[in-house]
Length: 464
Image (cartoon, rainbow, N blue to C red; front, top):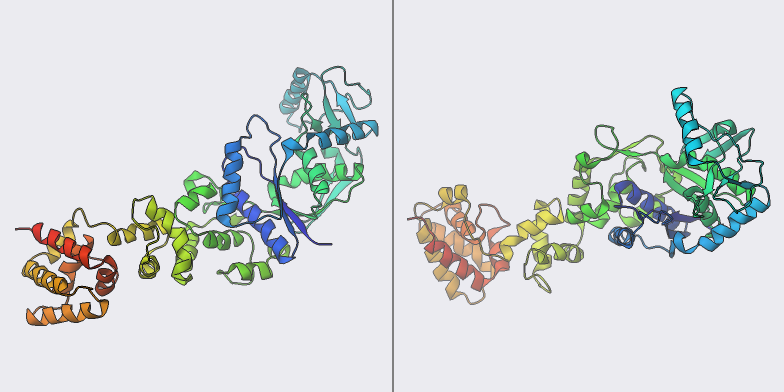
């Protein structure tokens, strides 16, 4: 049987890093096995589920480049199937209507807290066979004896005594089905064969397994991933950095880098750290998922992203960098210089945001000059250097890159100056700072007319 995995987020807020990792693991396993990857939106929480949050999920999937073979399916549109299944369970005596008052249940919970014991529903309505006339919830009849065993692909054999589980609610008073119930119905109906999700769902699995049996269904295999923690081993939160996937997109991380980074959060293949998508798909499976918690390391993410920026062909980086340039107001759309600009900035940038900041020199003349750089390099004969270089640029109608450094070297020789005292005043005039890619490439990319304008401006602004 072909492997079918799924990603089933609830649209109740941001798409967090843990959710993104779950989506990626399921996608990689499906692609590894040439199976199917299903997207399901679990929007049964009508108060918190919004279309805006659904779009956040879809945007996050698009950013990561995770295509799905089926879906998105919406639980809110599948209520008829849930209701039919609930009625069937009631008719077969495998579920029942419970009329216990909320205040009575709360009193029993409070007593359990006072006695320092775990509260379990006592089954007061289990054998009363109530009809639908009065307000009620519907509870599933859990097996009263024995134990429920999950052979988990990551956690191994996990056994829980059925005496530790109570008859849980599968439909609320208003008739809406609950999460654990819908998951079982949907996973079966959608042919899911492998459920890969966070270890925090393991307790849910012991509730769900008896429901599969009651419905006469074969349960999928399960692989519960340990949690992702911050560097201090505490639950991942804002203090460890951004937690929303879309924030990382805004911070300038390539989707290729995020896929590589997230794949290594709790999964390993020998000592290899860097993977292409093709390499991940070739080797990714549940047997590489670690049973210990994963540690979110921002420094590693920076390293992976910087490496991807250096190794990717510049033309492939263009569509990723372009939005960051446009939002800064740079005239970068359809700019033929962009691959060359990227090539020059790749070694200087950890993120697309940093690359866009470096790229400013190619689009905007400096409004001011770094005080330290100007003080160091705009002194002595620097003004004469810029004036003489300006004269030469005006004579070359193309500002050919191949001629720039020979001219700089000639100017240094003619004026009996070392090369830095010629190149650096010009660099500060071009960029406002003392650092840039090689001067000849920088000037060629800025272009003749703009170089002339910037030199003229620098000469006017030269300190008296």
